[in-house]
Image (cartoon, rainbow over all chains, first blue to last red; front, side):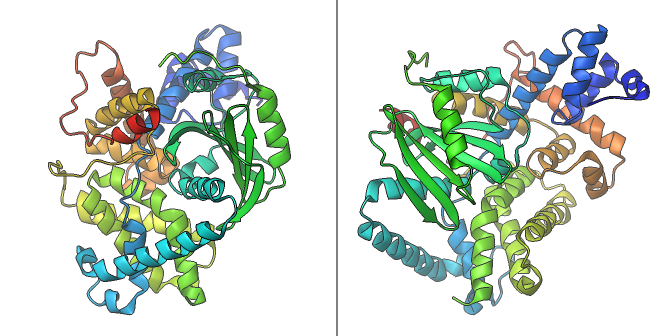
Length: 256
Length: 184
């Protein structure tokens, strides 16, 4: 980005610090940091930006809480006319029956689907991965690059090493289906592609699924598994190739 | 299930986690957050015919959640401390991550409401400073100052030898058992 002289003058160290504190994801900040470094006004501007983005990542991660288990059923029960009578504040005590019915119906549908699927374990994992997307929906809209130092750090903690040029827009360790996974989002022209990297998955078949409107691909890789999810599978090949080229198969000793 | 119910079900499944997170961090109370969501989705159900566009529905529901919070809780200066709250089960990360999340959460918990609310609206709600200013009836400069101070306060509290150490007493702790089990 080319800044006008006015903007350059406006961004001295003090203004840069204020901008970092009030909106560290402002897309203009990386360019401004470069200018401040090259002009000698603030030699540490880029490091300060990295540090601010890491803090932002920590804040966002700390806010990643899950809704209560029965919330979905509770909200779906709103469409039941019997429940709507008197549905106001603190009315959820009245919806137990509808919630139980909804949960039972969901369990039956999910159960029959899994029972008839020939790769039940992988299918279940794929379904869990799709469900997991709903827990971190904000991940899909991240467009700024996660700092490479943070990417490296998080992969290392999971016992893997990754190339420095691996560009990801969201990265968060999670537990899915009882397994540690790295939740990655990569922005592509066709939209965000989510990848869950399971470093210790026992075995994963190479399968394509379509679950709840999401295209899902499962892939085994050395001692682990990858699950790709997106609205369209168009960019799966490219993201998979990049990821496999960047991820080192030799595992490092986990420092945890 | 008719098409109206189908559309509503899609709205619930796709947005409830994000909306719940916003509501929870605004009011810091699970039961109140659930009530806010119920109110928001009840309005959505009544207006389903006008809510066919998913992205418009998201913005609309997020606005309802914010306004419902401001209307009900902020006006009453409702600042509660939960004593009997169930632990929030995170999609648990590594133990290090959980520990870090707990520390940051504790720091956020210690922010005054005037600092926490703009931060939540920006980080989870995705609002710009000017949108937050409109929402809270403040000047944009005031919002920027509050956001700056919120982050400064969090940074200070997270410093290893901070004078004002993080106070964990009011923090809802994540459920570590899941992560421990997965490590075993």
